[in-house]
Structures are given as structure tokens and as C-alpha cells.
Amino acid sequence: MRSRTVSGGRAVACLMMLVAAVCCPQGAQAAGPAKQSNVAADLAFVRDGNVFVTRGGVERQLTRDGGAARPRWAPDGRRIAYLVKNRLWVMNADGSAPRRLSGYASGGADWSPDGRWLAFMAPGCVGGPAVYRIDGAAKSPKPEVLFPAECKGQPLPVEKPAPARGTLAERIAQDNAVSWAPDGKRIAFRGGQCEAIYDACLTVGTIAGAVEEDFASFGGGGQRDGFAAVPAWRPDGMRLSWTASLEGGALQLVEYDLSAGTKRTLGVPGDRELSYLTTRTAFLTGERDGRSWVFRLDTGGNVRVPVSKGSQPDPRPLKS
Picture 1 (cartoon, rainbow, N blue to C red):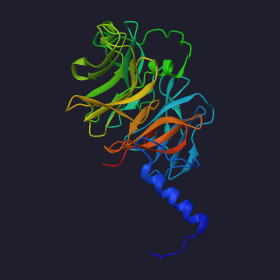
Picture 2: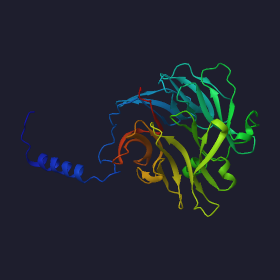
Picture 3: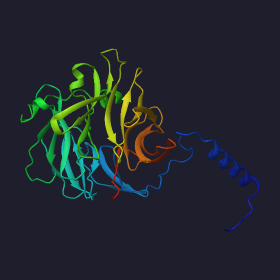
Picture 4: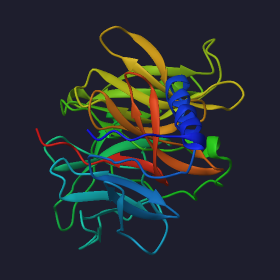
């Protein structure tokens, strides 16, 4: 290693940088110019209503007509599912060959681990949203109901007018993004049968038998007010995260350990929309310079590093 003498103001500057690095608390972002992190994986995200992909700080815009949301990589990394004005679409990973899969108002979809199916939420037969699956490769796919059990075999009902957009917290509270568990047997989603008891809840449904289990409940039954939405499974299936809001409306990320039955908060207050890359690395949406930014998160140390302006991140799955 080359050695060089640092004198005068440069020595002071170096000392200040060293102190800042040592004293920077967990969960805090480093001060200074906003530049991209060197992301070691392809990352899809949304900026100004379009889908982008970045790798190592190099960005590529995949859509240009606006209205896009919730991009999600297929397990083989060859396709991306996404929404366009609440309709489910799929395209190749380079943005080519976009095609619409469903003409119904849908929430953010997720792929089955084998890459065949896409699960999504849309209006259901009992008034609230239901969870469907659709063949991601079929030319004329037909949605099939997974939850609730009483809607199985029923067609999608007539679409209702979309509610007003509201505040960020109000939009997240009604976000119908789903997450398919790595074992392929379960799907996490907002709402479910538990909403017959509570004002808001998050459900993990077992596909076989359409069995629903309440994982987070708010309002009613003595529970405190709030909501849980935009779930995400860790790749090993041992932890499930979601975006939550408690009294006062502040957003926060919650991670639930299925083996220990414990919860912890990730990121910093206001963070949302977490998506895992590994058991140690995830990406989330936070705030920086008054705008939404995508951050990389070390879930072990809870350290955030800014990646790019945007929101709704989803990393391309690592090859097993």
C-alpha cells in the first residue's frame, strides 16, 4: 500500500470523516452527497411512475408511459411482473415484450417459487378483496381464487370505483401487494377473514385447504389502531416483514420471527416497502432530501445505505 503525507486542512478533513464513520448510529444514513450504493444485484424499483432497473449504480428505464407500480422479479430473473394503472402486466427483464395479464383492478403480484404462477389481490365474491393466482406464461390466462375458501370457483365480480388516493399512510393501508412464501405453500396478504373481527389485519394463508391465519391485528377486539400491509418473506421463509402504522399514523417496518414468535422494527421511522435479497440484506423505501429513496439495509446491524431516488424496490433473486 502506498503511504502519503496528509497535511493541514486535509488532515482535519480526514479526521472528521473518521469520527463520523465511527459515531454514525445504527439505522442512520451517512451524511454528504447523495450517491448510489454499489448494489451487487439487479434491483427493480419505481420512479415517477415508471419501472427502472439498476446494477452497480447503472440505471435503465424499462417503462415510459407512467402509471407503473410494484415491480416483482420472476424467480429465474427473466421476467418482471408489475402494475400499470392497477392492471397486472409482465415483461422481459430488459423491458421488451410487455403484455397485460389481467383486465381487473389488481394489487401488487408475486411469483410462485417455481415461476409458473402469479398471486394477486382483486375484488372478491364477499365484498372485500380476494387472492387469486394466474398463469404467468399463458396467452389467455384465467384467474383462479385461492382465498377466501367461499369464493373458490367464483368469477371475479364487477369492479368497483377506485377510492381516492389520500395520504401516503392511507394509500399503504389499502395496498393489496401480496408475498408468496419460499416454500410455495403459503401467501401473505392484507386483510382476510380476520377483518370480520378487527378493523385491519394481515393474514398468512395456506393454499391447501385455503386456511387463513391472522399474523397482525388492529382495532376491534381490544387491539390498538393501525394496519399492516405490503408483506415480504425472507428467502429462508423464517421471517416475514410488513409495513405497519400505529397511533399517530407514522409508518414503520416490522419483522416477525416465525420460530421465536417475536417482532422487531427495521430501518427508521417512516421506512416502508421492504424486500429481501438474502437473510442479511434487504431493500426498502425511505426518505432523503424530501423525496422517496431506495435504501439497502443490513438487517443484522440495521444500517441503511442510499441507493437511488425511487420507491417500491425488489431485488432480482439470487441463483440457488
